[in-house]
Amino acid sequence: MKLNSKIFFGAILATSVATASHANPVIDVYAGGMFGAGGASVYNDNHHSNYSARSFGALVGVDIPLLRVEAEYNHLTSDDFSTNDAMLNAYFKMLSTMVHPYIGVGVGTLFGGSYSHDNIKYDTKSTVAYQGMLGLTFDILAMPIKFDIEGRALYAPNFLEVGTEKPDLLHYDARLKVRYVF
Image 1 (cartoon, helix red, strand yellow):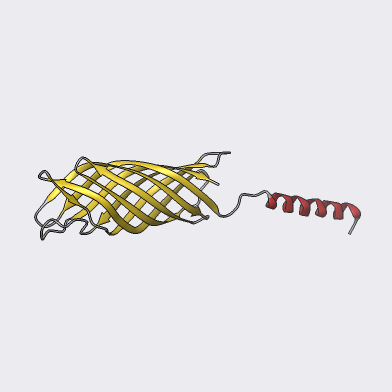
Image 2 (cartoon, rainbow, N blue to C red):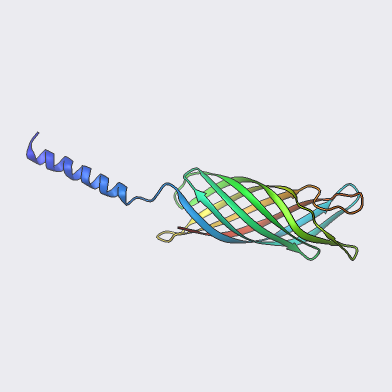
């Protein structure tokens, strides 16, 4: 092998090693906040009520190329009810350049709230909650910030005890999330 060939291959090797050491990490750790607006239904066999509702929350998570896992806290509120939830979510992403579609599922607990019906206030009980999400992630070039726009539905069975009735909660909204990648 001639000297020019050795220099050429040496330069390619040095460039690839230097480039790989400055590449983005495969795992991103992030924290963020969210706001949502939508509705909620409280229902059982004898009663059904619909409300407009809002949600506010905070989240932390880990993002890898095809999967995102996060823990989140939400405060759900409307004119007649207020409650909190803590969820563990998994999101399955499609790879693309700047806009990433995803679908997600979550499980957690609903806790610490109240519900008013016929001028009587009831405390919500802690119960398991499930949710499904569908959304888009927008990457902001040259900044460690990502925006998610998503639709979600949360279901919590038997979140109240009103006499012998145990109504369920279905909360659905559109959300805007802002995530800061560390």
